[in-house]
Length: 460
Image 1: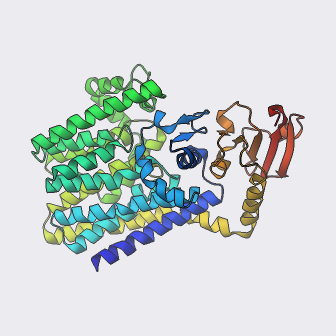
Image 2: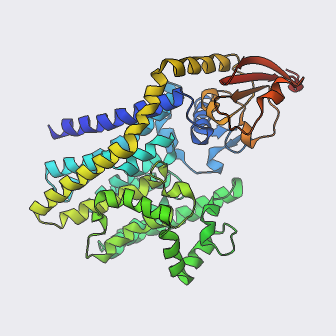
Image 3: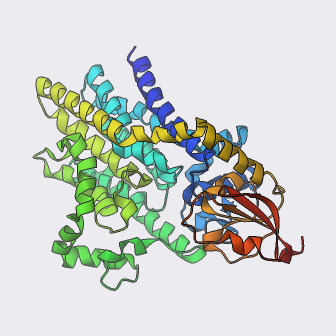
C-alpha cells in the first residue's frame, strides 16, 4: 500500500515535469546548451555508438572531451526505442523520480516509520532544488540523486559490495562527481568511524578524479575550473589556486558565500528545509555540506546558485540525507511535526516557483502559438536530412539528427543551410543581410517566425 502511494506521488511530480519540459521543447524553447548538443549526441550514439556532436565546441568531437559521462549510455536503449529529444526530456524526469526508491529504504533503515518515510519522499519530490533543476533540459547530473542515495543506503548497511558498485557508478556520472564521494568518505571516517571503507572510497575518488581531469586535459578542453576564477588570485583557472585561497584566506570565502544572490539561494535550498540539515550537535555531519558550499556557494558563476539549473542535484541529495539523520535524532512527536512542517514548506515553495512552468503547456495549445510552431516545423522540414546546418540556439534541438550542426552564435563555419529563429526582436543577427545577399537563396521565410536559407557558396 505504501509503495503504491509512493509511486502515485512520484508519478504526479514526474508527469508535471515531463509535460512542462516536453512542451518546452515542442514550443522551440529549449536552447542548444544543453538540449541541442545532447540531442545530437544521442543521435550519434544511436548511429555510431560514440558520444559525438558538433554543436558543443563548433567541431566534431566527443562529449567525453568535455565531460567524462559514460552514464548516459544507460538511457540510450530508451532513446533507440523512440529516437526523439522528447525521450530525453522524459527520461530525466524518470531518473530523478526513481531516486525515491533508495531514499525511502534509506529513511526506513534509519528507523523512520513508513508514514515518515513517505513524507520524506514527498519532500524530495517537491523540493525546489530537485524539481526546479529539471526545468533546464537534460544533463548528466540527473544521475546523482539516485546514485548518492544508493551509496548512502549501502553505507548505512555497511555493505562494502554495494558501496563499491555505487561509488563506481557515481564516478561515471561526471569527472567532478568523485568530489561528492570525497566528502562522504571523510564523513564515513570521522562521523561513522568506518575507517577502512572510508579510506578505500576516499583514495578511489581522489585517484579517479585526478585521472579523469588529466584525461580531459590531454584529449579534450581541460576541466572548466575558470568558473571558479573568483576563488583564484591568479585568475588562470588552475584548480590548485582554489585550494590555496581556501587555506590562506578563509575570510574571503565567507565574503563570496554571503553575496546577495547566494543568500536568496540559501533560503530556497536550506530555508525551505527549515534549516534542519544544520540542526545538529554532531559537527562531523557538517562535512556533508562541503559539496553544497564548494559547488553552489563559492563560485560567482550564476548558474551554480540557481535552483533552475542542474548544479544542485548532488548537493541537494546530501541536504535531504542530512534532513533525515538530523530528524532521526528527535523524539517521535517532534519528528513527525518537523516532517509535516517541512513537507508543507517544500510544497508551498514548489507551487510558488514551479507552477508557472505550466505556461509551456498553455502556450503550446494556444491557437496563435500553435500556428507559429507549425510554421517553424514546416520551415525546418525544407532542410534535407543529410544537409549541414547552422541554426540559432532554439532550433538546434529540432535539427539534432543532422550530422553537421552548428549554433550560429558560436560559429563562423560555412554550411549548406542556415535556419534563423525570427520570433525575437533583440537578436544578434540581421535577417535582411541574408535576404538581400546573393550568396543565400531563400528557401522558406515567414516574417517574425522563421527563415531558412541555402548557402550558394557551399556549391551544393
